[in-house]
Length: 280
Image 1: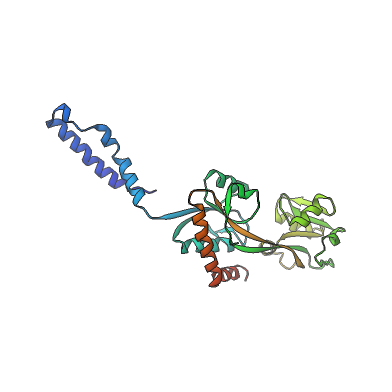
Image 2: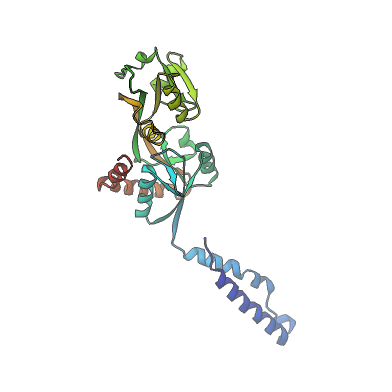
């Protein structure tokens, strides 16, 4: 909580001047207790804290363009803008931080941030945090192949067995696909970054790469490869992502208000306008 230091200094000086004046004209038994003076700044700070009504929230986000990314020093994106508008309507001051996903989770556990955005709901995460009931947005995971490829996909994962598939290490692509990988039904090659898969498929080292639809399209545009890959239909899966709050005494109340405002934003068309602004 911000304290008015000029106020602290001015009042403290008045008390100390008073102390010296009294010590020059009063007897020992009537002297002011120095410990009382030492508590003045703390008392002022407590008073300021108790009277302040500003509400604030610190939010962590990974880099996951176009949902969350940083451009010219500004953190923005579909998820970022929707969440920022939600808290604006709740009259909260918002501070955004970009962090690696694993670090964001640890910061939330330690109380270093209040919330993470665009995160999948799992039972394990619910042990140390609270999810919004309303999803921020629904995301789609798709298969991508070279533009001249004759590979087709009708939704049956087993039809992908003849092909080399590029995936990102430690990502989840849905229970059915993950189980097929675990049971070695599919041929997969793992990388650490989506750009590696783009270059591997262009070099014919893999046949298919899997990625969030909008994330892949953004990466292709950034690398000037938007005409070199195509998306197969139907999508592999769709996933709802949520706001994830740290546990605290006021968390349930905040989450309830957040959900109400998020529903409002969806109903009045604000969330759709934000979405459309990033996929032109």
